[in-house]
Length: 429
Image (cartoon, rainbow, N blue to C red; front, side, top):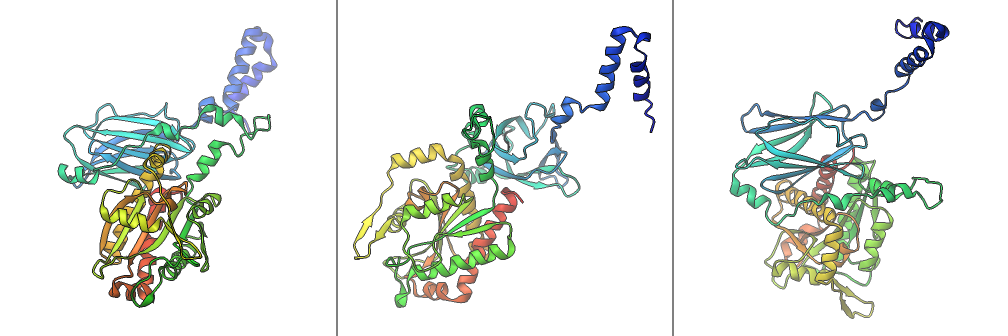
């Protein structure tokens, strides 16, 4: 097959006398520029540009991320009324070569940060504008859309209250770590810190922790029902739903039988399994028969008396001789964890919020809210982690519900749906 561009070049290459040495070199350069990949093509950026447009319904704006291929996954986090943060997980994005709009009425500034397996984005909303941000894939292209819905300032201030922005530098893997390899002296990059961190971002392992077990019955409720039995049944139902409807996600249990596991060991099991999410399932209890409903906890400093009581109870270890040991997690230890794992805490709060929604809206369960506490079992799991109080077995009505097939099905399905939604919205497909 003839090529109108290359054939003349080859002709001149065969007759260098007509060109001289300079002409031959020029012809060679031209030839190589056509047949060899261009350097820029080797770094073909998946994210080409960012644009904005008014929403057709007049309720806000849409920020479009123009992509050559869909991102593996994404996250949206809104820590303040004037800041929306996103993470796009896609290896082939160069943050130095993205075209941005010259003027936007939606935001004043947008900044990009390299993080393992993707990029972090800070979007600083224009002063006086108040938006709730939700991201979704464009149905007609590979683009990612960030829908900005106008909301009341007071409502947005409430939604973002007591949340902290993501510090992107905490995700940064140093060049030294990337280049060191596996310690074999050959520059082998397999199993580097970078690869391990990137793999941790793939949502493919869920660790389910049925609380208590063995000689530790947990709370004992109406008609002598034991927490350890209820939570094991619910945990297995959750795992069964994941196995059936999310076959690409591996389920790991901290216990599958009536067995006692130390609080610290539960976190170790999750870490050894390289879990992406740790769910510790429990039942609540109270001296009164009146309290009822679900509660969700993530790691942090408890800010209410009720959270303190739950934290104390779940940190209490029952020994075989019926002696009890009260485990403690100091504020100093908590601070160190928060500084090193702020992203895990933010994700934990997000997942807890998703579960609260499922309990409240879908399972029609009364929600007592999402709270923080210094739970030892969560502290030792190096991943997003949530402790679920499924209900009060000290309340006769709730005890009957939590021991029934119907009640356990509703609770387990609500937990499952939250896990699935989190994966679909934030984890890799």
